[in-house]
Every structure is written in C-alpha cells, then in structure tokens.
Amino acid sequence: MKNNIVLIGFMGVGKGTTARKLAELTGLYALDCDDLIESLVNAKVKKIFKDHGEKHFRSLEKKTAIWLEKNVQGTIVSTGGGFYGVDNLKSIGKVVLLHGDFDQIIERLLQHPNAAKKIKKRPLLQNMGKARELYERRLPFYREVADVEICVDERKVEDICNEIMEKLALKKMV
Ligand code: S3P
Image (cartoon, rainbow, N blue to C red):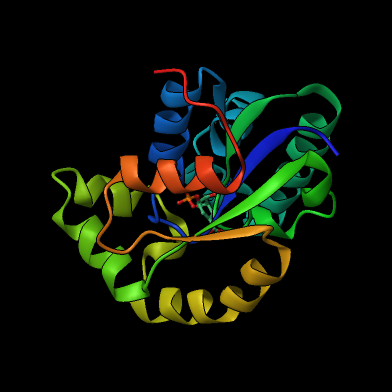
C-alpha cells in the first residue's frame, strides 16, 4: 500500500480545506482529485456532468485513482464525494473519512460567504432532498472503506487535523 492519506466524505464536509491544512502542518503536499480531473480534460466538474453525464465523470475518477496509485507517494489526497467508489481506493493510501451530520454540513456551507458559488458548482447538490438521500445511501459505504473516521461537526480545521495526525502518527512540522 502507498503511504498517501486519502480524505473521503460527503460534499461540503471540508476535505479540501482539511487536506491543505494537513499539508501545512506536516510539510507534505496536498492534491485534489477534482482538480486533477479538471486539468486532465480541461473542463470544470459541472461542465463534465452537463456535457458527458455522471457516468463519464466516474470513469475519470477511476482513471485518476489508477494514476494516483501508480505515481503518487507521501501525499495528502482530497477526493470528490463519490471517489470512495473507485476499485483501488485502499491501494492509494490510508483512507480517512471526514464525517459530519447532513444538516450541519449544509448549514455550514450556507453560512460561507461564497455559499451560492459552492452550491452551484456541485451538480449533485442542486436538489437538497436528493442530496440527503445520497448522503444516507453513501454513509455505510464510506464507513466500510474507511480506516479512520473523524467527526467534523462544530470543530475547527486545526482540531480535525490534530486528530488525524494523532490517529495516523504523522509528525508535525510547524
Ligand atoms: C461529487 C462530489 C464533488 C465532485 C462531483 C461529484 C459527489 O466533490 O466530485 O460534483 O459525487 O459527491 P466534493 O465532494 O468536493 O464536493
């Protein structure tokens, strides 16, 4: 198994923010799967969904997962909310589930100064009823693939990172 740290969890739970803070604290690099996909096809996630559909996006996630396993080491990898479904997830690194209550995730997202943009860019967050169903459907699968689960509700990113570092025995650089 590669020594990456793979952050999974529902949309808006703070995977990217946590990955960047963890990178700052550990001196490791952070990579984001959606950024990799967007650069691979030179299009935003929203446009990929619109022009080619979700199935195509999932195939790009699979391709990215294979690339990560083959080429990336010692890195913190933040993923999209559906990336947990790739076949080789556990071969990329230690899987950390960031878990939060659905209502709290959405509440926090709505309080963000860029809330409208953050919601608009996520095709699967356009209908809150469907998003809640998706959350409930995915939760057992997230838990099944995770090596470690961290609760993010009402916690600061530093606190979340400290727990991840403690659980994975990562050294602090700063
Ligand atoms: C998705 C989550 C998104 C993005 C895409 C699909 C999902 O990433 O990959 O819109 O299936 O949950 P975030 O989890 O960063 O929002």
